[in-house]
Length: 251
Image 1: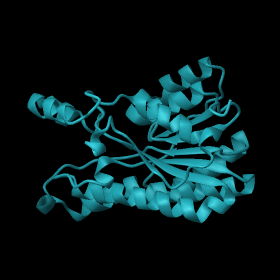
Image 2: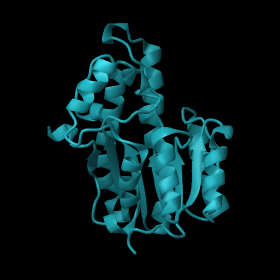
Image 3: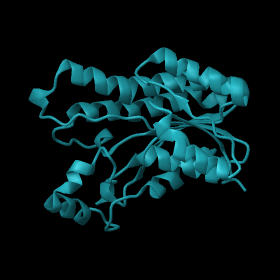
Image 4: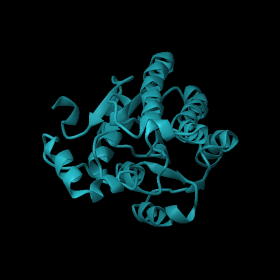
């Protein structure tokens, strides 16, 4: 079954909640042994229990993704403990909502450090091991703001646009090593990053009216795409930014 991940080792950064946790759980359900990563180990305890109950190995790890030495040592530690890295999912992210004229240098640095810089160096660190193995799968998380302009989150959009560009560039450069690099692009999902938007009933109705499938996404929607991109079924797909948006970008 080309959609199964039995025996694979998947590292999921940003696995403590929301879309990242959904992808981590789905990868384990498909057979992968899991290394969920977050800023605190306590936030990963419930997920770890679920994964171990499936009969999978689960090694939660605490990493501050803004600290590059921790990002690099993460991958080395995974290989030391589990022998390999087959799949990397970069689901880490943070958000600052302000008008562009109110954004500060600190806002810029924070958003770029977490949303773009850490993604690049996690890819780099994982790829060193994947090259030695002869193959690997990297899945980044882009955003509607990777391709659309949205007010009050301009720096976030710039960071996510960078993720999309990074995904394409790494895919081309690492294809000869049989490393597939793709990104999923979630549309409107109710998560901690978007919860404030959906508190406004009028805004929520407008958003849903713009989605051809008539609803917001849930973590399982994005997780299914991630499992596909992590599996052998997607071996001839690389450098793609795949919308999982209910048709938003096509409407």
